[in-house]
Image 1: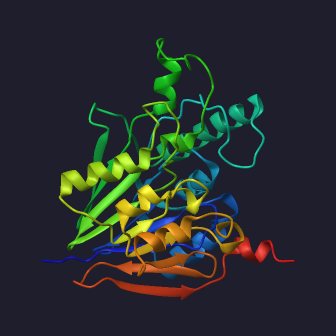
Image 2 (image 1 turned 90 degrees about the horizontal axis):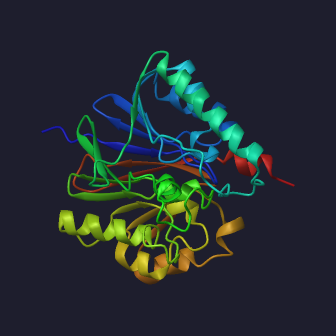
Length: 311
């Protein structure tokens, strides 16, 4: 039985772009910030990729949707998997100022992406069927999507909620987590799922709840490869979560410039002293899950973000 499956983690900082590879087919998860597009094009060219089975967007923030419209204009892509964007958030989730103009531009960008995708591809809206779970088949693997519900929209439209018709929170609370079990290996792609201590039941410790659900359904107790939630940001990898994960490898799309300010790495090491932490500042990482042992290739390539911010 052919067990071919690879994940390519491109060396983006404060943004995500992943390429899936199986049986000569390719797909993408997220598309990084806009200024990374030349690097993405070069990477696709080096792999000989002119066609993608699909692109999956984990949530509607510019460091994830940044190059979607360009990809659909420049490449043959079968499908776009995306949550409907409702424009009800109340903060940007990054350093940008939150204004009504920001909301208007986000809605305009969303429509631009949908228009680009519908010209030659199928747009598949990810909507909760009551299970808060969906699957996407991709050659030898199945992507399991957790937390597909639109939390912000649900709270906004709930007449019994204190947040009824209020723009609150940010799209990280709508981020989809992805789990793949392949060839005996457990892979958890945390996107920007938050692990907030908020008292709101729908949003409380989402990361922990998702991981516990995965463990229960798959009868497992650890994660082999973990793409850190929210670029390893403050509060996203609390010790309770890292103790659950016991990750063997952790890819963090960030650099020491920010990671030194948080307890992310110390928590990961406390939970598993042998964890291999892979930051995306000077390498691209290719995980090959085709054999019984994970093969990791580290491709030297300084992040464009680092290059542009050198003194």
